[in-house]
Image 1 (cartoon, helix red, strand yellow):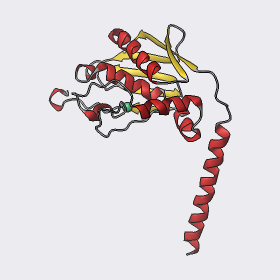
Image 2 (spheres, helix red, strand yellow):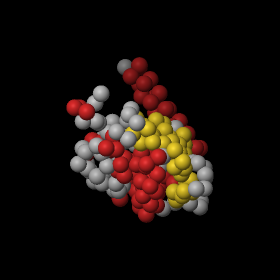
Image 3 (cartoon, rainbow, N blue to C red):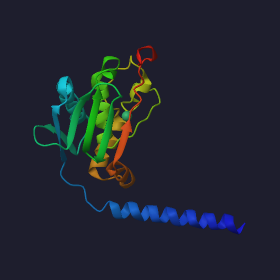
Image 4 (cartoon, rainbow, N blue to C red):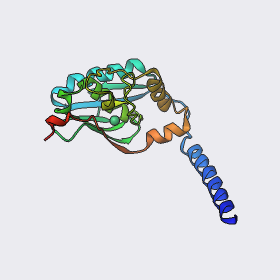
Length: 189
Ligand SMILES: [Zn+2]
């Protein structure tokens, strides 16, 4: 019994520390919109699609603006094979890799907006719902929806506003998102 109580006390202490940590990590007040400069110099044939994806995110969100030709917060690369993925170094910063082979099966614009969604702080949500952008490849090749849901867009807006401490902490963290965007089995190899 004492060990059980000990675990409960330890868990409570951990929760308190986690709460304290989040509070300390989020001292900044809401400020001017962040400009995320994206660079398509290595995006190959996906450069135009990157621009479309930027417009979609700009129209759907507040507190951030994706802008071309102003810097390299976000670098976009065209690759062949291995799957599309995103490497977020911090909220609004990182690299996106778009797999040409996957883009022949899935909507390239949906892949692009999804991967950029990771840079903007969103995790994967592979539930097969085409109405969600972060459901990614789980919604199948027939799903071409390139738009974040209202909830997804609002979450990004709130992350950049810094109004949700826990999510901001999550969004600020570095992470690698290796996306399934599962290839059709018969074409693998
Ligand atoms: Zn993903």
